[in-house]
Length: 215
Image 1 (tube, one colour):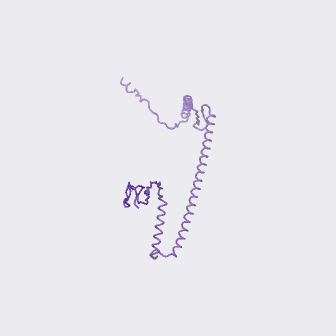
Image 2 (cartoon, helix red, strand yellow; image 1 turned 120 degrees about the horizontal axis):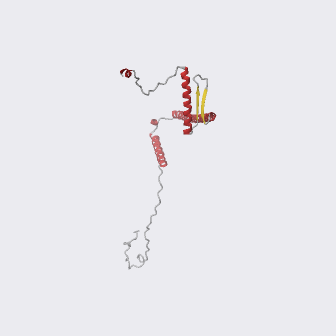
Image 3 (tube, rainbow, N blue to C red; image 1 turned 90 degrees about the vertical axis):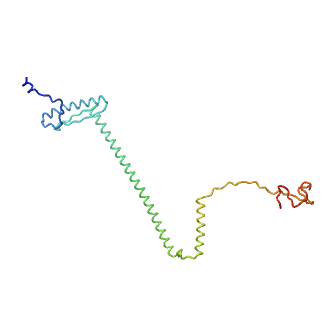
């Protein structure tokens, strides 16, 4: 009884075998055949279940044979892959050409801007040289007489006023029509009375009638 217990093998359970190249040629060939069959079977199942086109190319361990599997067929999948590859190549070339054209256009635009700026700088330099040459023969402001300085000041003030009016135009105000009350004209008769009869105001010339403007 005790001897049977001592010689009994203890199972180690399910263990994962590490993947590594099989060195034995016969075992490697057998394993390749089994795994290839299982691989093609799984490819057929995924093509049927998911409705996808699939192509698998497997070379033998010694590169002596080539095994293929295609769904719906090897040629159909190959033709589709080649066509897609050509389309991607054409699209890539077109995109590359567009990028190159855009880059060249940007370079031309930048060169044009550089030429314009160089011309402007050259013009400003020429103007500066001309002003410098013209200023050599003119007396300094500190050496001008007082009368000339006052005249220059007045001219500058006038110029400043004109610039201010141009930059800040005043809005036109509407013309308001006001009633003009003119003084009431009176006529004096030979007897010296206003407005005819003397019974209203009397004959006093120094007293003005109500509402009349004295002369």
